[in-house]
Length: 124
Image 1 (cartoon, rainbow, N blue to C red):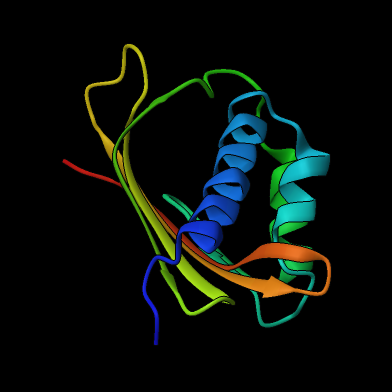
Image 2: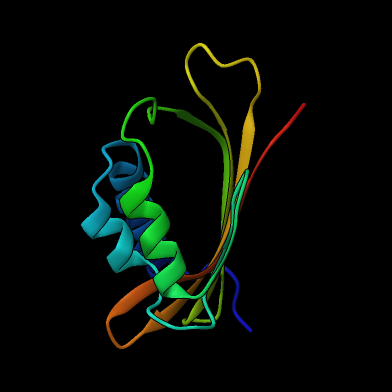
């Protein structure tokens, strides 16, 4: 298996950057598009466990649109072959003492790169 093929890494970086921009600007349409539309998709958040695309979509539609700006640090993207990748980052929100971390598993689908599993947590 080839790790971090430059052209695949560039594709995943583009998808990750698109996700991050949509997250901080609360572009729910793009966020929804970047998650795999499947009952197998999951997202563990700071206060919620979401199973299936529909649960994730409902969460996004209901969440507040304020206080979303953040700075990512120590982001690590790793691709495995041409169709599978992981993205891990730490983040800090302005005025918030606790830092967070986010993990995503991405797969290439016929529609493009999609998140199939995500986890967000805050550190003490």
